[in-house]
Length: 178
Image (cartoon, rainbow, N blue to C red; front, side, top):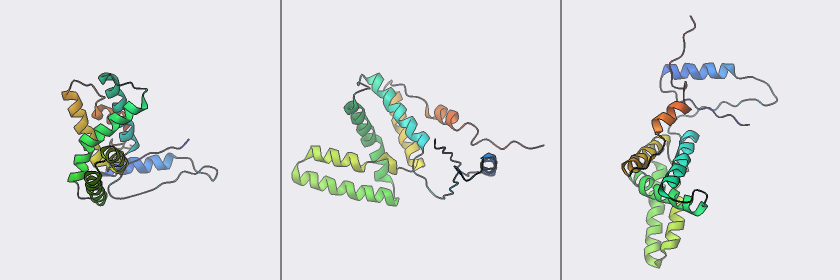
């Protein structure tokens, strides 16, 4: 089983928690742990992705979409991305966002020239990938669609509660040894 733990070093307390966590890991040649340190804007987290798909399931149940119907789930997934992620990508100035903007402009022109709206949707769905969103952009995406759903009377798991439960202890100040 693969273990994945992420610490964002936003303050000295988190850095100390990270160090303590690594110190407690078993060492050995049979199945060693790998520690990777990166800087900069990270792509959306696994926790964010889990929350997103939990929300898609909750949204499907509450709006009458057949939750076991992959077509309906993918349709909802595409519509949520189109309504809430697309505007965020269009407003961003990151390299990934600029690539998306260029691809989007190209498929819009091609769709206008050919009149192929079905092909536009298929291609747009492929390039409008939530996998390319940063943690910050994906959080804004979640907050935006969550608020919209709440305003429509659709109950989705509260993101703050989910993050608190998922990251419990990760952002806490370290315990003193004395």
